[in-house]
Image 1 (cartoon, rainbow, N blue to C red):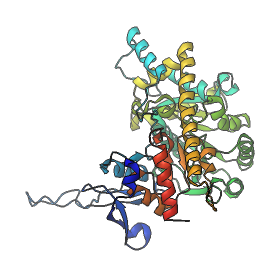
Image 2 (cartoon, rainbow, N blue to C red):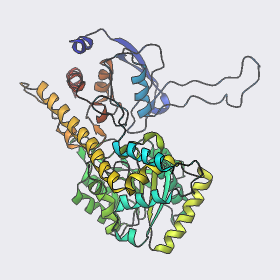
Image 3 (cartoon, rainbow, N blue to C red):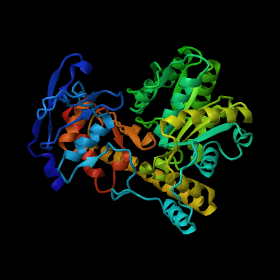
Image 4 (tube, one colour):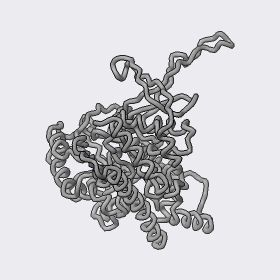
Length: 474
């Protein structure tokens, strides 16, 4: 068929240059692609390392004057955006995008949640949409709903008003505000520990706020699962009162999460060392379809007496990627302290962006405060979670089928065992580069966005992955 024929076409080589600053010496390797004249960017993403072309800005030839910016060089793309660029410049109609972390339906289209659409209609009909400024800390209805969504309405810290909540510019904004708050207000000097690997944006967010960054063991490449013992050991060996960045659920980029019992052990180990727990919660509800289950990690910590920070995003679980809506929650000792923390958060927000965007807050607040819309949202978010889970299972079934009769079979079970938007495929960089000659795009570290898989491309994807592993055995 057309897809199989494409796999057999002659492939044109493209040289990839590795900058000496990142890899010790400048080397050139050759891979293949059908992309044409546009610049080609590649990056690993998971470890934050990048390959990229660079260009120096020169003085204007027209005026003969030097420029203020002539010393600058083109900044490299991070791994996620480099993969997106490689996909975009490929003209093939068969190309498969497994790089971008945006939910797509089975037809490969963006999906506006029915609950969100109904909330928009309700807001328009009631004339509640205004274009005035929101307060520094956001729309009160939204922050109340967001706090209750995170911790549960009946959680003692919510009932006792022991959570300071501010609206932020999505999850990245929540992390950024939280990082600066810690840098300004921690009563002790602390390093920040990030999981290995982690979301590429975590590095600059904390580094730019003056923190020294350390890594803790998380992913075990031998099992494609959690290195739980290494995780615990690093918690126990870190200096007391260190800051640990934790993924609440659906770890990005690996899709590997601790179990509920493992989270309890992690909480105890963190408490013994008096560490500060900062949770990045971007997938509550989206991971499993159950918001309470997906928030179980930080709820366990709160029950154990931790004063956690929780950064929330409503990009994935509400499909509001472009509205940039999120929240930061900080657990305090009492209601009075909550007010003080809120005042300090406002001091961070005011010079940073002053006021958060309103429209996304109106949507989320309306969905969560309306019982019928909340019920519909529960259906919507489970629809997304179930499709992702099903796509994982179908891909593994196709990969296993291609190995039937083989004496030596490769296990792909880790893909269906992992959870959330992303999976760590276990593919090596040469295998991923081979996939790009077949118009399949994922990050060079093997991270793949499961949302890019659908019934029309899963068979082709499985054949491409099988070919890549045969061409470049581990």
